[in-house]
Length: 543
Ligand code: C2O
Ligand code: CU
Ligand code: CU
Image (cartoon, rainbow, N blue to C red; front, side, top):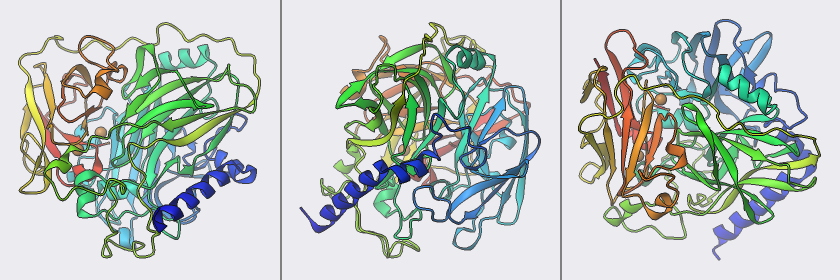
């Protein structure tokens, strides 16, 4: 075993031992509300229900990283005399949303920025198109009515070329919408946001010696995606949530720049089934029982975890299960990496501050098995609720369901330029290579090159349905729930869909809903944020 590897294992052991020790666990559970805790009133990832216009100031904040207490970038907001950082915004469908984003990024972080409300309906001027990025010292005002159905949406920066770095260094959080269907389900299952209904942002990070998030991608990382060496949940290391023997709802959000998860629930070495109730676009029509779910950057899933059969003292872990991350681009690209090093390359000494002092730890392999957080049952509760057989009614598409011939988007690596492309193109701020008429139903085929890697493809402004998956790798094909090769995660409304190498995913975006006034300019891009910043993104003009 190499020296580094040994050190890494020793550190990992220390980290997990610490995570289980009482005083620290208490500190950590404060970040993910424990079952007994009241809704976090303020602080980092606290719930913020806007009662009027809010200001979100993008800035560096000291002592904020929950795992280490180091500085990070965050959106700071004030309401009712309380200060929030990266607030989880909670709004009702139909509510007016007014926000001013202030760019207070300074020093090494000074750069243009703009907020994108991922998954939220809004005219393109409200959606954070990169052409609206504002320089340090400037601000951007948003005002729109929340017209989405209930769901777990999110917000993050979208300035072209800086999206990955700013999101990674901390600027990202959730935007929850509630409506009547949502309230009915919460009542039926006796779920309370922040107590038994827990929003969880998952992000992998590399930490500098000082405990700060370290973003220093090498040229290879820009091609494959930048992987961290540990996974944090709401910024905390393997938090332990104290729970009672009842049903919990987890709203799981992949906020990583590149890492794909294969999420499972495990207890005492066994896999526990769970219920998938919602994805990107809100509640499914009915709950789907699963034992594993792939979750790619940008995607959200909401699951119900049933702890009724778990004895007090026992825990259920949310854990990544081993899978093949399918980095087939190695085939012709640069020399084959050392199989024991994950994507690790020697840190680039010019990569920026912190790099030189960073401990040389190997990135946590994407396909490895590792725990993320756990629910520890500490008390029994009488709980006799049943998951309703019908959760929601999906909106009917604005046009016919059977669209005409599909438009093809190949996702392939351009070896000459060292960039990932969509239909042979990379981003040009001034070009709109995709033009659609909002009255014409669309079918798009997203085609993963066989010698590529997985790409989570995201469309701004509109939701789509997944029509089919063809040529899926075995690890995906065996999860199909219908004859069209779709998995449970493809049901309902999606804004981001994972396309594996060799796979063709057919989607039907609904450009008729919402019916925004006038011509619109949105984006189609890969939500591997290194890929996006490198230009795996196209403007979409909607007429
Ligand atoms: Cu969440 Cu254009 O991205
Ligand atoms: Cu988006
Ligand atoms: Cu990609």
